Length: 75
Image (cartoon, helix red, strand yellow):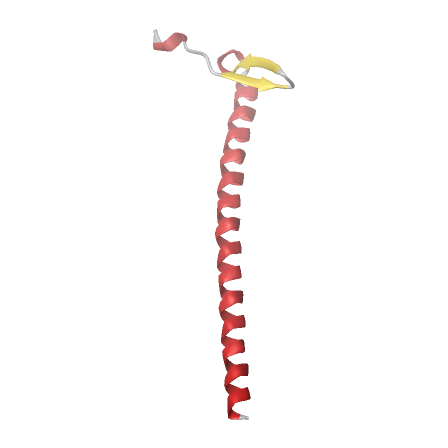
């Protein structure tokens, strides 16, 4: 039973089955799937880097503000 299950893929609003594609077409499908995973991972990394950069920028701004306030007090 499980062998008869086909994997659908939609290209240009038309549905195809991966199992009915040529080996070259299946390779292209695999490349596309791998690239999608890599793009998702890259976006995840960019989100982390962006938040980290923002946090360090905020910490620097706060540190500089504290120095400015201390210098104002010292006169």
